[in-house]
Amino acid sequence: MNSARKLPFWHKGGPTVDDDHEVPLDYLQGAGMVDAPAALEQFRAGPGGFGSVRSVGWDLNVIEKDGLLENVYAVAVEPGDAAVEATLVWNRHYESQFPFEPRSADDTNLRLEVWAVDPDRPENARLLDYSDSPLDNVEHVHCRVDPAYPGIEIVVRCNGPVTPTETGTETYALAWRTTGEKWSADPWWGDLNADGLVDRTDHLIARLLDLDGALLGVEGFAELLNLSQARIDLLRSHWAQWRPLVTAALEPIAAQPTP
Image (cartoon, rainbow, N blue to C red; front, side):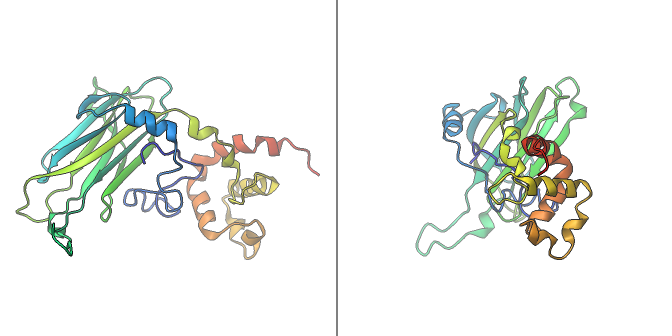
């Protein structure tokens, strides 16, 4: 999961940013497209405990359920690193005998955070992103690194006991890696209406989004451009972030003479 390649327009949860920290994966893409070479690289990196770790790796560890401690994985940002991905999973608890009833009181709510840090200025640490689903036993973060900081810290913490008397530990697995700009070079950033083509219709959609996208709400206009309302909401919510990537992908279309 952590090595999956994000395709263009990957975004957690619904089309807006409202649920980004509570829904760990994209409703359509999940964690992304299977990338076998990256998965092998992730696996071969081998396990490593928390503390200072390499730029790619994984760990099987435990954390106290009382929420008083956190496990921190410190990663140095290398030249060419543009993004960081981290995935945290842990088990639900069930009775050991049939019918294997859930033991909800024993379940734990873990949280995954990614911080930009400077060892020389620890007080200036900045939270880049976090994943804290109230329902799932998986957390996932994919975010850009901050080039102004020489390192990042991936933090696993427990949100505290489900019951006041809860003690003990929770076993979890964590995988992480830093990546370059591969995601940004995908030509399918130009396929704004997701019809499998990069054409003049997409170029028109981009121009309309530059004008705040209000015209896309005119009755019948979105259907003419083969756009769903969910797609419009997604594009409008993230247009400022995605516009440079779309521009690069649409350059061949923009350069064509108008018929």
